[in-house]
Length: 463
Figure 1: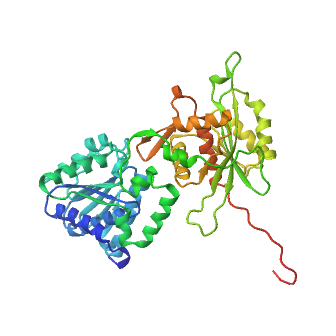
Figure 2: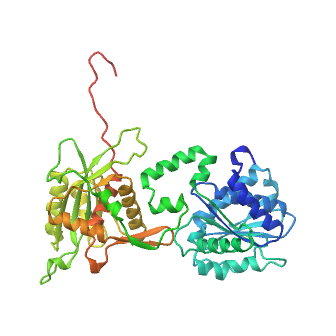
């Protein structure tokens, strides 16, 4: 390959072990953990290129599975095809059936590991690769993919698990633990792990990038721990540790009105309406959180604004049609918010639609809660706290202050497959209205940019 695609020392180390297992018929199980963007896909493509060209006179298959066919398996297919072209081999290559690349008689087969995929009948004579193994279902793999490596006529095929850690229940973590145990018994290395610091030694620009991510996310953020430090996380627990809650506590005073020249955003979590004869405290509250944005200088490493919570409004059990007018007045006429993120799930959809009409579409950001969108909100919230960019107003003795901090202390997190998370307050411990409103405020602030400075040209100076 040309210099642009030359493998780095850590890639070569893992690649040599995999190639040795294949060419010597060892049939090993090998796990490879590399920090995000460290080049595991390039390693995989060059291994495939090597094996296909070495076996092009044989009717032999290598198989690579991924959590999804589109886009993950297709990306791998495009990379391999590109490397074949750069090696001048297109004359002996062909694409078949939309998921196979053939070089001579040897084939690289790309398959989806999605639960509904039909993959039975394939055999991996050369190599079985599992891309993003932390996201592949263990039962699906053991039942339908693992047998592919054991059905070769001569010996078991080598299996390689690629990915980054998540929690201790994934297929990748299972492979890592098994390989480390075997290493302790016979001394033969089967697990290869390269965190971001190893990669930075070979690529200083990468190190600078990850340093920026550490400042933006915080070094204890789940994504930084798993994708860059390669440390698995526990399945759940408190959303905020005591030190994170200390970071969230600010020193600025609560405000009842805006200050001229400052920029504000808001998060609005919609609660239920009380029916006739029901107590208002039976329902979640509608909570509106107002935040002041302080933008960083243009040369700052992290360009996200500092966000100071300055006011809370809570409405419990009130009819939504009676709330509309007050919300419009608070958001549009009192605080003049640049952006408000609104819970547009269920009953909230009507409120969000009304506010969009009253305040202009560019002001209102409807957010429909799903497992994916809520996970994104949770990660953004943690990053803002960890990075010191989110602060709540100082103690003022108010009911809102007490409710806010009670929810911050009671907030829990559960980490799920595919690097998603859920955050909540157990119903037996209260509500999560202030928590969700805070997360929506952080989302709203992400969509606000500093106003462009305006100034007059001096007399005698032409534009």
